[in-house]
Length: 237
Image: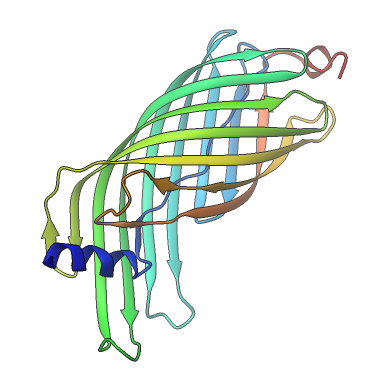
């Protein structure tokens, strides 16, 4: 019962230690393509991807969060990196891909709680975790605007978690379902593009000992070099 009450208090405290990053959906056009991009949302996301062959690609991503409240009585710090390898196909109208990867992250959340029923308290939560994921994506292959749907499945394993000075030891990794919609706008023949993404994260486990960010919206710019020429990839679009 004591553990259950502790979990309920953590979940109601809105203290995310796990902050899911922006989904990197490259949707390559061909071998030799390089993509780099930056996004602002829950934090700052830096992403890169390279198509090694006409069907194999690799990616590397990094996320950094450092947010403080206006009253300066709470803050969130988080950093995460990951690498992945995947398979992709590109047709005249549609692209699809599936990537699998591994990453490591750590988060810190500090909050001051003061309401009518609980005495004022300062709570600090920190954690370190590893994540395995599979991410299939499908999207359109048009000249100007493209939509992308991604469905990431993440296996998040916290190796270390400390809440209010108490260290938690548990062997119950959580599986997260993390769908996202991305809108990407190309600027004609320019290698520069802009995109926005909105996504959700929820766990199939129900309650977790740590809290997490359930929603994100991001906006950013990217650079796409090499690969199949746009006029060939867009023929007939």
